[in-house]
Image 1 (cartoon, each protein chain N blue to C red):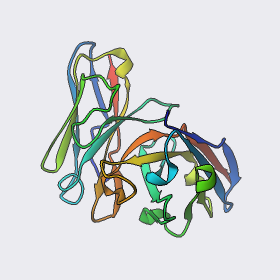
Image 2: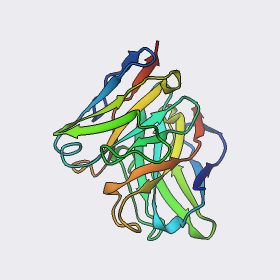
Image 3: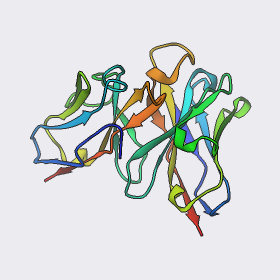
Length: 127
Length: 110
């Protein structure tokens, strides 16, 4: 079955970086966008950006531009999200989610819905 | 402040029908599909409705979605205790060039 398994919880100091991994199985990794979404404590879901595993292309929400790096290793079907210059308000659960659409292959993320999602990775930032 | 607006809470008794609204603008809901996700705390969010009104396999037909203009709705009929969760709408926003979520609606089954 299609599954996304994320790396374990992280505790980081402000100013540091964190890298979360998301291992995909049950489908062809390069055929679907990978999105990243986070949820801060007591808050709603917040979209961070997408990565095209086929081309390596990425795009992120404006508030994360310059701080987030999304990459993929096709040899092990794993996506990564690295967030730098961490602040206390980056404390959140980070999710990866496969972007699905009716169109075959990775064409545009505009028509994506997210299915499935990874189990989430708690990142705690302390000062 | 979320781009898509949802009521923060909704409630109903078992067997009732409840609806959750999601309001946006011409750059998101008005020109793109709406997807809905169910999220139980401590678990991964789950796709509930895609492309405005399509149900993935395994989602009961008690759940239905609709869209009109710049608003969308999620309806849950025959409410069950297991439906108690947070519900989020989401859509692509052409102006922001990315996905926007609603603030989420916490559904309580009384």
